[in-house]
Length: 460
Image (cartoon, rainbow, N blue to C red; front, side, top):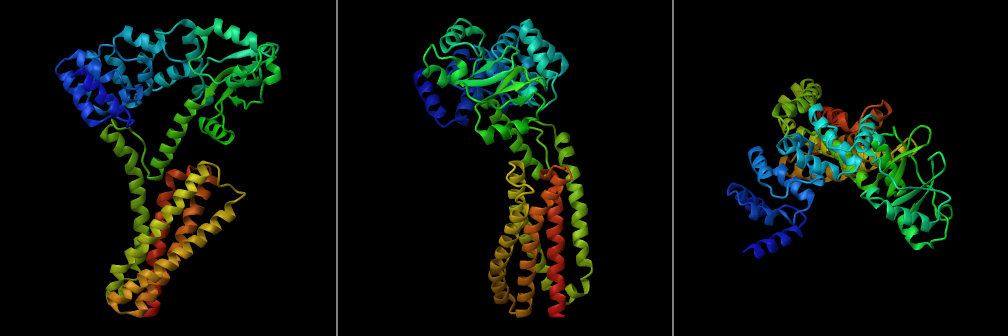
């Protein structure tokens, strides 16, 4: 039976995710206090899948699982766990197990692990480190949050420029225990420990032993220690970097950033932009109700104000609406289509700004193209919806008013969707956070005013 279970788990792992049936089997083993069964079920799982398992189950189940787990949790699992439950998991772990898990991690992973913990728990983890490792982590924690200094790992592979390939390889083999777990380049440094070039590991292994490192080294992109992590991610993406040295203001090498760290930054920044576009913050799957309310309610209140301003247009056309009741039925459609069109343009614009594909250099061309697209879409929608309205209501003048309002609102929606985030960016505001509220106000106001105004001129 055990063999069959292992085969089932291996098949499920091929889908790169946790299967609900597997989670159920693990919880059954926990309830039955079946340590052997639990070991069989969890042994093949990747650290990221174990972290997902701990995040998906409830607090009581999480506690029982961690207490029963025979092989214990390792450092890689700790670094993968969502920060919203990280403190809770650490509290359940025996001090010895926690110390052993933390010692397995590079300095950047330790920093990521402890930066969101309470001071007491930070001290527990720091106390488990060797003096040199603790000093490295504390130095990284002294840098600003979201900076390259926080993101980097202190462990680097460096060699003087007068060394040969053979000397470097022999030295690295002798000092293998002190090398980073993951590295891609050997940084060539001058006597003041400033990087002057980099030798990719692939180049090092292909070169003859007597070749000087200075002869095969490549130019490098240095990352200032105080650079924002979003800027670092942009540089990695633009120049297709795998790793980069981090230097302090004097140019001295203090650490490195590798592409695995950047993947996490890109994911985090993209998630923040998507959530900000909707006017919410990420309080996590385990966040409290009041935290979630506090992050969303202010934007809803602002949206209520802008919606009230947009609807105030209707008050000016009460007499016309009373005379032609059909106007009240059709005007939300105009506003809705404009809002959808604006959302499309806004999403593209915010993403382009975040990736620096949209700037002052190409702003006019980009906005003009979006306006043309808005007009074309408006014309097509005007024809389709206009014909439908004529078939339903049999009123040609109503059909013309509706079609004209659609074209106008789609044009304005495209313009607002592109110009509002650009304006907010110019004012130093995050366009992902507040653009949607203002763009929605513009499309609602324009849609109501255009339709009711044109209808008043044509029909009455």
